[in-house]
Length: 141
Image (cartoon, rainbow, N blue to C red):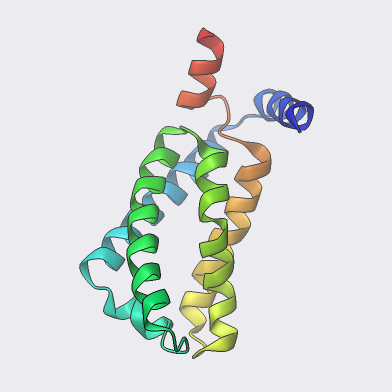
């Protein structure tokens, strides 16, 4: 596993472009905005989760999603622990896509969730890139 990550890092560092870094930062900003939105007004998330019958799962998800989006977005902006942050949030992103098929289908929510899922899978493979805290820390070691 370590060898695969090393190869992916080498490839990412040799093919780093500013638009990709801007895309990572935009994903981070989007997650911060969504996190704040879910924390301030959890009724939208509760509306999406109305298909779930288990109240405890719904309450847990409302708190988990908002806080992890907010903290994860901040870390993504700086490019710190990018892969870890996205892997931790991957179940939320997959759930956001799938919930549209089990509950009420919201086209905008589905589109946003699908874009975030695809971008997160890309950055899990690609990594933070050259213009990130992860890269700077690696170069200092």
